[in-house]
Image 1 (cartoon, rainbow, N blue to C red):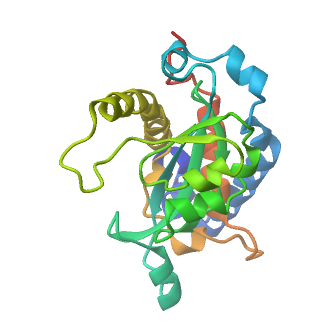
Image 2: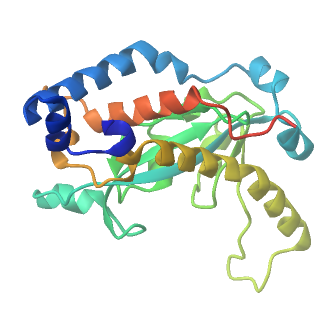
Length: 246
């Protein structure tokens, strides 16, 4: 109920006739347990598995080379009292304090990677280059991303190719060939946004605002919100894919 409805622990305590502290403790323990038991459901498939199940919409545009589609999403949090934390988590895009996550999906629509949380001001490029995702790429892989992911050199270092929508760079308009390629990229890249939207719609806790106390576990070494996001992604992978195979 906490994941789906994001009810306050006080509300949950009243519903189940337990204290607010007990409701919070049970939630934390169950989240950690679920993550430990099922985190293997978020995995990077091998190349043969990707190619043998490549949806037709991707195959028509890129053949069987697409390995992953990248995007970032942000979760609103309460304003931190610490000034440094407040500055690091401030998102100019959301105009709020947020925690940002990098998510990757396969062409088939399953979540194959979810990063740890980063402050909202952190760039997509920095998160991608420091989250171990690039090390999973193989030579010849194609990575689809939004134009904010200026990581072509980093991707190229692994002998892979980054495909992003074109932009004018000060020119009056795009070249017709670039426009057509941008249209093709957008037609399949939108699936990662659909996966994010599906996950957010199923689990209201991801819409925030998240309490500061939810950001850390009691041992103060791991982030509970990271575990919550991972569990939500695991549960999304158990649902039907948003990407049609034909």
